[in-house]
Length: 440
Image (cartoon, rainbow, N blue to C red):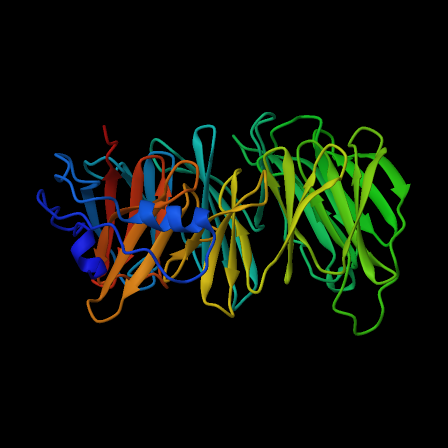
């Protein structure tokens, strides 16, 4: 049975679309959990549900080069021609709420909401210019503008942190940066913090705990900057190894609401060290295989990724809970699941972050990354010019096929989810929004 037989066309929902038959058990030697997971992808034939999985709520026609993003209950679309303009559409349906000319729109555009504002952060790769514009969420009126990139949201204080990113694979390549905290309502500066070349900094975003701060590492000096005042709260020396010329292994820093972490190479391994915010008290250290680790929050654990290593440590004491070998890229899906792509076998596994066990093997389905919303998976049907869309079931034990997008254009806009809505760009110069129906 082809994928086309198993899904509903999202443009014209089919009330009587057949459901796929249960597949014949594979002869390949795979884990019993994986067999169960594949079975869940194709339940036994049954009557079609009365309500289609996805209901089209709106279509927005755009020009080439447009970009957009769903945030909250709104779809924000930025178009650069014939004039630079941002338009706000309700996801549910109805006319646009407003449309505003924003002259600084260019390049990479990011939307965020805080209080009664929508922040539009833009970076032009050609000129290297960055801007952040605050628009009134109700009317679209421009409230303020600053020539800096959005770094972090601090909703508890009603602040926004602006400045260029200093995330770099090697600390010695990080540029000097001015970081500015402004009042979200007015854009008025509260404080400025400057650090020189060769320093790394990171801030939780959004800031969920007022006790958290901005972590700054310059050489072996680790500082925490108070987000309320911009003053250095504490500084201490940390044992980081000097970089070896030409080495690809460098120093990394990551800030979370409850602690900050420093990873650094040391004698053929990497050492991950956790510090508290109040006085930079050492909490724990963990010895890891040598690598440049990306770090993500996974509930009570911290997930670390550096090909070919994937592991999780207990955020309370640094104990390594599980280790896996990853032959390709690794990305967290949500607080309970992490995705590991095995390039050699062209398969993808969904791993339970609590236990480190693989709960689902996938072939032919690719996940969305760095997108807001629940985990969504895609499979291209090149001859049929369609993109099949599926969601990860609660518990991660299977995929729920939602439908198919005709004429997809994932490279320009992609598909994103927010709440109960799915938003996709198509090559017909349209952005379409579907409401995900709740079954049962």
